[in-house]
Length: 176
Image (cartoon, rainbow, N blue to C red; front, side, top):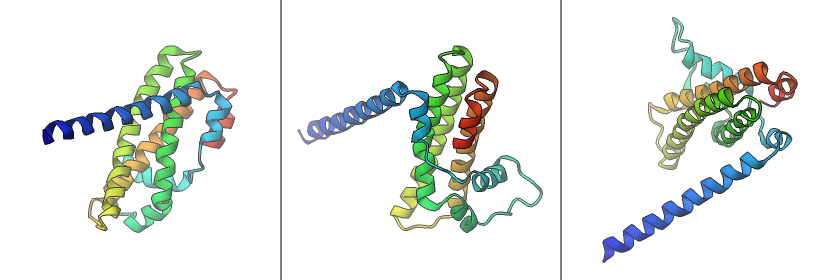
């Protein structure tokens, strides 16, 4: 009997979570382009790029950035939350391109969704580590993953707009 109740509670929680995701995705996909741009929170691009490229383009001295430097460059937990919130908006902006270039818009949006999964996973791990008051050796890896995933999402989106809608590109590049 307890097992059935536990299973019912887990099923209900899963259904509520799926409904929330569906409603929020529907809201993002129904917004116009200007509303999507307005939803983007500012992210320090130059600092983000430094951390991301440190991970994506290894050099001879691979221990250049200290974890504290990465943490402050990304804006701490607030910066990570901002990147996580922006990830959904960036995917919605990529999906928006599918209105005039379906094939490329869908493919880039799917790549960005996968990058977003990596970003969410890394932010989740960072939050768990801080919730448990641990400062593991893995924290720099999670910070690198979050920064590089977000950086790749932004670069994919900018390249998509540059080739498909040059008129919107300047405003987008200023917002991302």
